[in-house]
Length: 88
Image 1 (cartoon, rainbow, N blue to C red):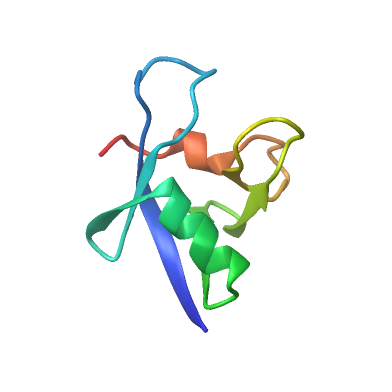
Image 2 (cartoon, rainbow, N blue to C red):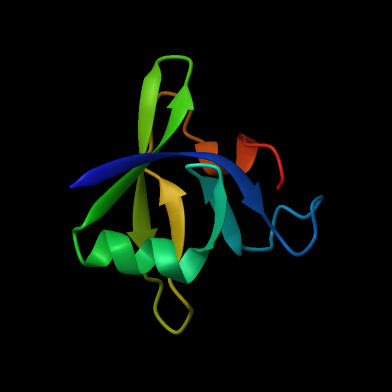
């Protein structure tokens, strides 16, 4: 199983805290959120974000009635570490 560090994100509106992530960048290439979800679901790849205390794993969230999205598993900050990454 390959493990990838997500280094950048893309949202439709850079300044919005309400809009979802549409793309992420890892291994120097931009990928869609759906592709990352598929790789996590198939258990072929894992993803993480580098944080001061080490790493935060990326997980898929499936809210009822809404499209699935990705976020980091809660750590000491209590925030989604993906949202603190630079935009690509």
